[in-house]
Length: 414
Image (cartoon, rainbow, N blue to C red; front, side, top):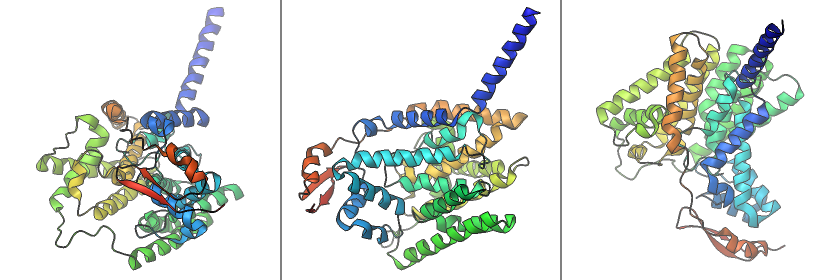
């Protein structure tokens, strides 16, 4: 009897551990995501640095105040970047790099947290979809930099797209505010507005209609700015598009990068690269449209993948060769890589050979990308040497990363 009771107790303990591993507390998953962020960009935590246009957003907030919110950059509004820059100026301009890094981390962890929401159809799998947000292989310039935070927020907009309708005032407020903030940060509302409209038409619910209306309004604002502003992504006079590189770029920087990691050579043969590109697109299409549960959510993920990847390739059409240089154009493949990873994780929970193959591919992805997860550190440009002068409101020109970039700050009265 004692032995039997002990065995039953052990079985119960095993079941509890299995349940805990399958659905760990959200706080534990967030801590794991934060640890991954800190390990990938350790120097960003110990010695925070501005990167490129981080300095621009800070300088405009420092000089213009709230008027900077109305100023387009690269053809459209970047509302979240303006919010963070304004926050840094209001709290302590001398600590701006640290506040930028902390704010970027907070937004990234928020997007990871959204994958754990009961309204999000992504499989929980022990927090794997949340960890995927910080384990995307190509993230140079993306993680813990404010200027490229829009790409993480674009993934957050996709999560809004596939999530269930709001219930209660708090969820309504969250969804509408998140849609407006992400919609006015970067061009993603323009690309995803048709999918939100289709979602509203198919669901015919108040929540989906309201969300589609907000995204459409944001897309209208951003679209008008793009059409009336200077051409974005225009090539030099006489520049041509190397169409032969389109599929190899997809194969190299999406399929091969996610699944083969350091084993994938940047010197991709054009024929093999084209085959890899076709296989990547076909694989994503299969994962999105295969029969099974959550097919609508997977279809929306797949359509988002193709639309956002197409937009990225159009934006970089005159510099497709950069996709074959290490670290270059990482921001343009961040969302396609993440969506492909989420679709693969959807398949992991499936029974049969498809689920086993998906699990093996996830393990392969993790192992082959381990050497790539640690990002190269930015140079220490010694922002601390200028903190006293910034705090005193003196005019100063501060060097930032990459080398040669500076932040010119005018005199500022107290």
